[in-house]
Length: 255
Image (cartoon, rainbow, N blue to C red; front, top):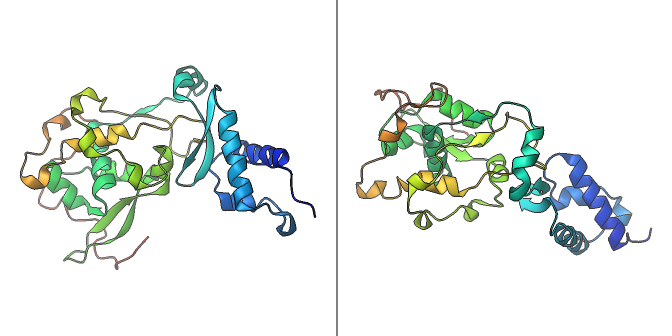
């Protein structure tokens, strides 16, 4: 069977990315073709690069995230396109953002270690919300009494924040003034497709984490920002048991 021409390959890949509703990896794109007509990896890479170039000056862009490639709305037109989504957007507290930042920058980390750094107990609702968002998962258990769960980020986290890997997280040293950053993220309902949505700015994670960058050197944790947090996503009063993980007796497991 003859090889697929470049222009046709571009059209096939473009259509697949638009129809998928989620990022597609190069392997998934290659699986669209019969074995005897499968294009080379280099051909797919060239087609993707050409599609990215075709987006110049348009309202959408083709980006690569952890799970693969996807089309998404450009930042400069997102305010108008967002009016298509009528669902009420959730507003998450500073406490949730700080917790997510610590998991992202210091993973794997236990809930107790997060509480030790922040100086307040981590609400069960925060961890549950992050897990429901598929941003955080249990990646193992610390080999200490009680075997507390170790938390880490997921591919879903990387995809949402427009990252290919954790190496692309903004450097904490680049963030100087946490108060200049909006402490909340406006997010859509869990499970909502982000194929043509705007991913949040990972710089906000770095800003939230900046308050803790010198925590190991003995600086005071930024606990005063927790006042007024929502019951659903705020902090709980610190208790001696708050650092212990629910289900601590489960066998050590790597998710």
